[in-house]
Image (cartoon, rainbow, N blue to C red):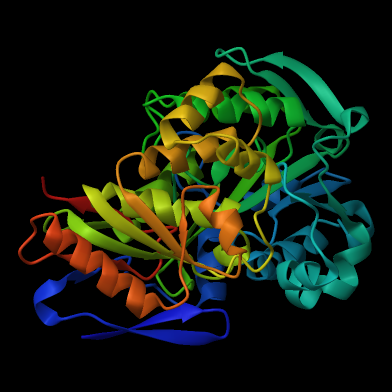
Length: 429
């Protein structure tokens, strides 16, 4: 069977013998009720209160406000921000809130700020009107943070001061599985989205816990941290969350109370992104699609999700251009400083720094399986992180199948995840 694998501006052909193909597992089909604009408008008309009861809440939410802060995702997320702004800005105007009283805060977390091209991607047709009203969060600027105490886990809560300078806050985002926060979206707009560096570092250290994994919310200390920050916001918050389908089109949207809208979106996201596969595979080909192919830091999610359905001793093949490089040299340097994945994990536990959770997750996969990658990254850099560089994707797959046969698998099985960053396979044991 020939499978087309997206890579940069082209497709890579991959031939897999029918007898070896376990599945091409993508997010499940979900029938959207209308266009993206109609779905978002419908969500606003049926906003949820804290109890999950439907009511038209945006106009009364804006009543009496003189200024509004809109928190939006950066360009590493496929969130349909411009579609959301299409619906939100007229509502603000109807409430007497013009662009001069509107601030857009880009929730970069600890990432770099957007380039101009990325601002255009985020804002779409609103670029000219809103660009001068945009501010990119800078986690390392301590003078721009407000100290609000600590979470139940001891994480210091430092949040961007602009959250406390507007009468109302509108949080936008998209909800999909996340490899250690359980799911993206909702509370993640604030922590880590607009949190201080020390907050993000302490929160992400909790990703080393066994309870911090994809789909997990109850008992997940990373999620607990995020939730603990929300009651400390002084201005009322209104949320607008989208759930995308496998083609990154808007499948559903929820709005209103931050918690209620988040959990409603999580319910839809589970139906779309959790995929049943008949068994674990000998070889998993996991693809990081645009925009998650921006760097290895983001693309690692495809490794982690692929590993869920990979047999011990198997081979995981990542396909991601990593067009912007490594993403954060810290986790890569940590891996390079260790001679084995086990030693890397030991080093991480001895002295954690932000980004090391990424190294820990990667090392955990490399400790039990072979990892290879088709990227634009230097070969030696990949090898230093326990990843074998690939020139030919087909040759890499053929070699992985042969290794499995030599290891005793008569008919090694291949699982392909064309959207590995958000597809969570549930493999029968």
